[in-house]
Amino acid sequence: LRYIEFFPSARQENLFIGMLHGFSVMGVPRKVYTDNMKSVVVRRLADGTPVWNKDYEAFQKLIGFKTSLHKVAHPWSKGKVERLVRYVKGNFIQGRTFTNLTDLNRAALDWCHEKNSQVTRTRDLVPMEEHYKHEKLGKLPEMDAIIPYLAPLRKITYDGYVNYENRLYGVPMRFSGKNVRVQRTREVLQILS
Image (cartoon, rainbow, N blue to C red; front, side, top):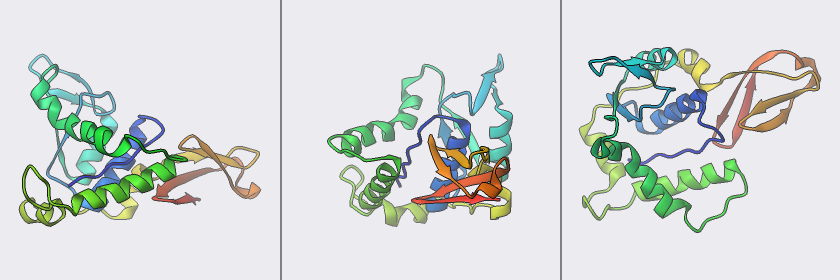
């Protein structure tokens, strides 16, 4: 099953938000494959054991999945992580224009739904139908537990703006200088005080 989402930066908070959005659509898998990026793993010990980024380690324990890192400089395992990226570049992005990040993510979600509902040529099955048959998927924890990952903290400027995803949003002046949580669910932005 495919799920893609675009963000203006590769910050760790965006990784968590994207994973939570994906898990809410597809369920929580037992194992997630990732690159050896600093937001996931700090380094490897001499025996190859990963030293997890402390925030990522807390996140994976809370959500209830294990992470499998691809082997360094090993094209076969890297391919598992990069295959969807190549597919998206060749089949979704090419030849399209988007007005902004919201438009891009709306089109990406529609495209994923379309592709997940069609028979695949290579495996002769419909991903949407097959996804839930074989893998036992977990559920996300309660909203109170995941809100720190889903809605990062931001400080309202003294002139009444909050910065989220490289955009400024105006808020009532009575919130100036306060810390708030900001989250986006598809096209809806929520500022939580």
